[in-house]
Length: 154
Image (cartoon, rainbow, N blue to C red; front, side, top):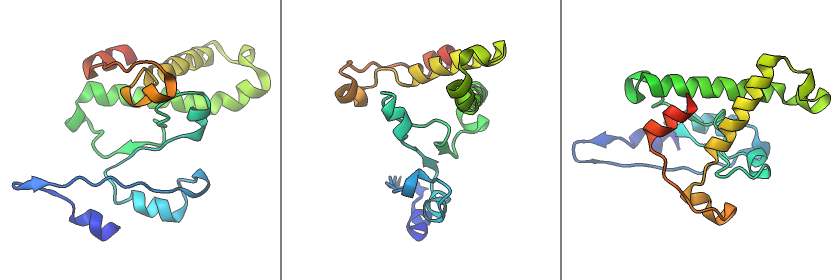
């Protein structure tokens, strides 16, 4: 696959886009086979069984999904900084899951409670009514422009 991916490029005459579906054994992204494959890709969109179980569609995991295009010089400083803050918030929320499961929200600091509330809002925001999720949610899809998304996530 590496040889094929290395040949895919944009030229003055045109471009080729390749979309690969990669099976990840036991959902282990560090498994050598998928990890080697991911090294050749510009972006990865990781679907999460856990998010799907929570009814969040599309079940895209923003922590495990990546893109080489997420750089300030490509997407702009505001977009980049917003994405980094969102990932930090969701990462901290993921770290707090075990504590919440064992002790509950009452044992968290005020700062951690704010992080949990913000992360839950972010999860709901990322699962807004997408056209592709209509069949799963029964809600009609809506379009939200990039500027509005950045504003809402800040």
